[in-house]
Image (cartoon, rainbow, N blue to C red; front, side, top):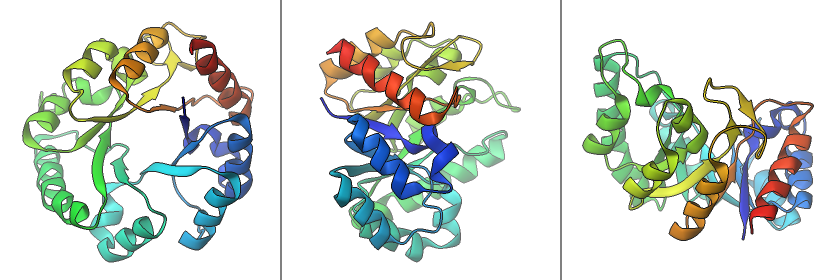
Length: 239
């Protein structure tokens, strides 16, 4: 099994030393890198980080705003690093107007990106499963009004009161990756194996569906690399 790491997990070091962070997580055994920002590094520098450590980019968490403000430059960068999927990590969807604008924007941009060889996806938190200010449950709008691929964050779905395994089955035809992570129902995150989220069941379902698993561990307790190592060891224990 090849596992990925969302680099937000080690944000305590990426901001100052992204090449070192990639090297350290690769040494742990992670094979897929999901970037959360590039901190001024060029595409050539990013490619060197990947090749030097025998890892590949599985996707990025990059906001919709970057496409809206600099479409050509953003696409050129992501093509240069061979990013297969541009994952929107969240967005202000607090009103009906904002939901409608988001859907209009992604429905226009998604086919443009696909023509460039890049898929487009969406990563959830808990709020997309809960009513917004206008009573809209955004996840329902997302799946019915767009063709975006899905990266289900299984912990945030759990924190919203959903069954993440059932969601994986329901949306398996659009599911490109999952975030496998742990924590408590109240939204407090923990490393894998240390919370109450159904991570073992999520793991088995991901294997059944053939969906790549990307770790995101958010609490930096005591630091990002320690959490990432705990999570990697948990995943290996499930094999």
